[in-house]
Length: 292
Image 1 (cartoon, rainbow, N blue to C red):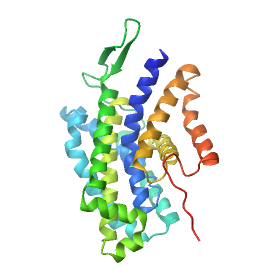
Image 2: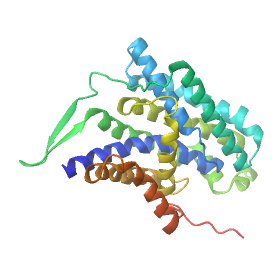
Image 3: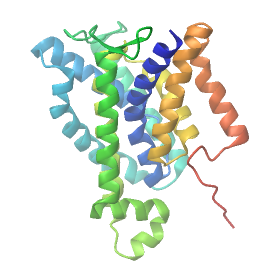
Image 4: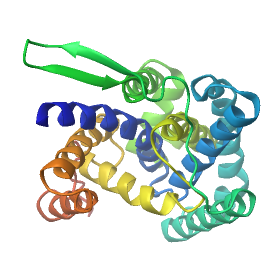
């Protein structure tokens, strides 16, 4: 049973990785924590739910329309809302918090406080994998789909960052924004595009989220704390670190729910976050930065 639970936690961790990939990328370029990231994820989940309940469009297929929409929303939000504030990290964090509260209010006024989830024909489907005569794993189709999608999304992000001109500009901006600007990188365009990519990735996470978890307008308050724990453990701005941390925390959460109680398992995120900040504040894949 413990092996089964650990595998489920690993699959869930893959979904977590999709959720946080955009958040850590945005931090790497803009050096701010987007507090509204989880609220945009919930918005994507609602859109997937409405398209499924109203038009019968599967949440996986709905990504075809939701992802470009969120990329556009991200670019506009960065250019028209965040950019005019300047580079003050404190003001930007407060502004993204205001965006989160606004989205929560809008979604709450439209859908109320009732929890929603998407139930498709394959929601309860299981794929049995026989490893031996005494061990047969049962893999939920939804979580397995999310796990595969996580590697696809992270693979695409890796290709963008390492095999494109935009990726070189993003990496240069992450390393030193002023130096990148001096050699001709359009910092404003890089920031808006990165914010758009960040919201596009969380749109994918939101569609998968709607298939696995229940949600309402205020669900983002619980999930942003989990997202922050993952990117801090992985190392702020590190995509590989975010993937590793998401898998670790997914397994830790699932195993603790069985070995202890489901009430204690959410605390595992914050306990690991506390230990990370005490013993390795730069995270698993982060690097210490000397300033003088």
